[in-house]
Figure 1 (cartoon, one colour):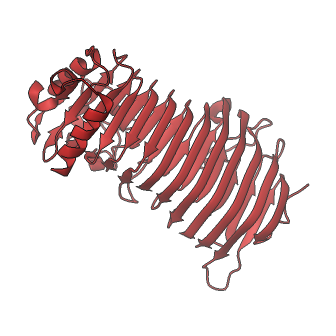
Figure 2 (cartoon, rainbow, N blue to C red):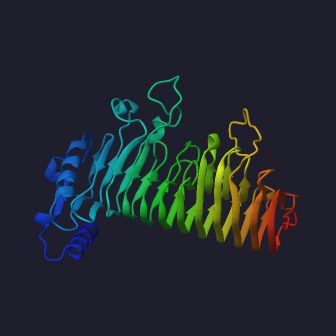
Figure 3 (tube, rainbow, N blue to C red):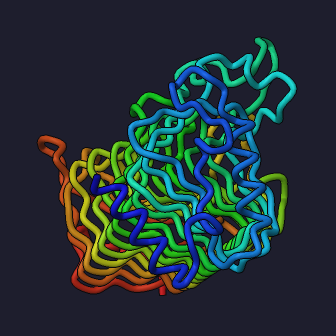
Length: 398
């Protein structure tokens, strides 16, 4: 009853003077069954097409509570007539159990929104990727190297709001933002087993003016990953763990010209993560990662809490030193406390030719939980300064 009240309240607020008959598009009215077994993909697409083409302001597609909707791979395309459109999810959406359901569909995505402006996906429902079938072998057939589907993809979406949902067990990444502008993500709960490979919480690429806040993310890979072409990314009040922390990169693969700037991570907690806050680049790339800050961070038994790694090569095969590298500069770490299950708690491995510049530490205190080991820092060709920091970072060069 509370969920119905919430939906009706939203409809009344965003569409004064309009009746629900012209402004609300209930998936059940377009043939959806909601029993968790019947394919409701066609019904969802019909409801979306009607809402997207509606002449009214702020149309709302409604997915009701106490129903489970089974969807095959589906793309909701824009542009839409209205400057904003609501996708209200109170029920559950589940993916196919079998990978064979992707035959004839692009293997890289399950649910996707493309070229939709003013999209607002709000609710208390759950999006369940049922990804366990993909984790051991992310291909339809054995013997082929490939990547499994992203559960929820947004491509070329501006003024996007994503709020309140539960995202679980993605096939690969849970949420991907690509070429998006003006995004607000809040109050999400994203989870997958710590052993599930490549199940990143939120991946951001070629996007700007993104805010992510007040969410829990615990998966088998990065809680949040920021890739090339992204700028003005603000991340606050995130509980991260398990997972691989919050990462920028890896940038510069295959000599690419990659850029990231104005990334600010604040008031976040990392519990039991494999890494904490990390910037990683391949050898041989060009471009920059700059104007980055990590502030008011707490680590709880995190592995490798602070890392700059300009020799990223996860396969450890054919790893070569190159003459060019991404330039890392203007990175600050402040008001950071916590514990690490390693003794090397600060690791700044900068490129031997380009190096890192203006790396700042202030009020950083990280202890090691390794018996008999004191926490220490390591630097290679890193330049900057530190104050009120333990372990001391006297390996920083001027």
